[in-house]
Length: 104
Image 1 (spheres, helix red, strand yellow):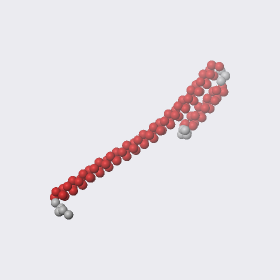
Image 2 (cartoon, helix red, strand yellow):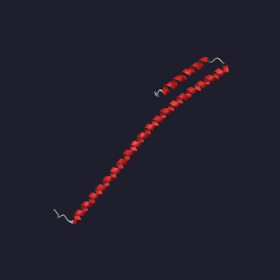
Image 3 (cartoon, rainbow, N blue to C red):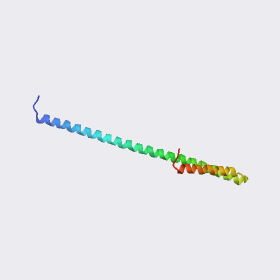
Image 4 (cartoon, rainbow, N blue to C red):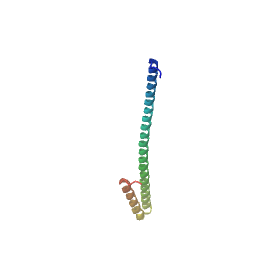
C-alpha cells in the first residue's frame, strides 16, 4: 500500500465532497418529484369533484327546462296538469338526490 500523503488525503476528501453534493442534488430532485406528484393528485381530485358537480348542475338544469316547458304547455292549452305534476316530481327528485350528496 502507498503511504497516506496530503495529496491522497485531499483527493479522498474531494471525491467524498463530490459524492455528498451529488447525493444532495439527487435527494432534492426526488423531493421535488414527490411534491409535484402530490400536487398532481390533489389537482386530479379537485377536477373529479368539479366534474361531478358540473354533471349534477347539468341534470338539474335539464329538469328545470322540462318544468318550464310544462308551464308553457299549460299556459298555451290550459289542461296540461299531468305534465306539470310529472315535471314537479322529476325536479323534486333530482334536487333531493343532488342535495343529499348521492351524485352518481
